[in-house]
Length: 245
Image 1 (cartoon, one colour):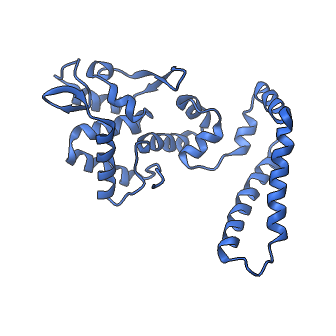
Image 2 (tube, helix red, strand yellow):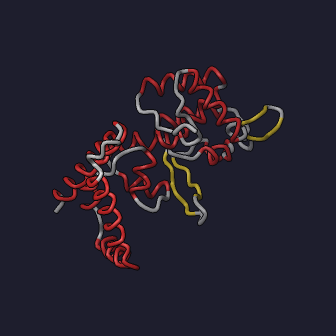
C-alpha cells in the first residue's frame, strides 16, 4: 500500500485539478472542497446542494462522539460553489452519481477517480485522505498553528497531527504553548504506573544496544543509514528541548 501524502506544490495541484475537470467537473468541485476546507471525503459526499450553496462555513459532526466542528470556505471557494450550484435542485446531492437518480457518487468511485487522476500526472501517493492532508499541510506551512488543525480534526494530540501531515514536531513551539493544565496532565500520566521511567528505560536500552553493537563486523550499510537518520532526529529534538525555557 502506498503512503498517502499531501500535494505540496501549486503546479502539481493545478495539474491534478485540471485532470479532474477532464474526467468530470463534479470531481474538481469535490477536490476543491476537500483541499479548501479540510473536510473528509465521506462528509463531502453526504452534502446536498442546499447544505453548501451560499454558505461561508459548514458545521459537521466528526468522530465517534459526534463532536461538532466548523469548516470555513474562502471567498474564492464560495464563488466556485456558487457557480457550480446555480440552477441546481437544492435537494439534489452536490456530487451526484447519475443524473437519473438522486444518489451521491460512492466513496469507492470517488477514490478510484482521485487515484486515476494522480496516476495520469505521475502521482502514486493519492488516496481518500489526500485532500485533507493537502489542506492541513498548506495551513500549517502558512500559519505554523498545529493546534488549530488538531482541534479541527479531533486528534488526541499534536503529535498525531504532525504525523498526519508528515511533518516533524516543533517541540519548542509545543512546549511553549503547553498550558498549566496540560503540564499537570503530563506529570500525572508520566507517573501513572511508572510510565515515564518505563519509556525512558526503553529509549536508553535501544540506544545502548545500538552503541554496543556499533562496531559489529556484520553490520550492513543499511544499519548505519538507520542509525544516522535516528541520530539526526534525536539531535534536533534534544536541541529543541534544551533551548526551550
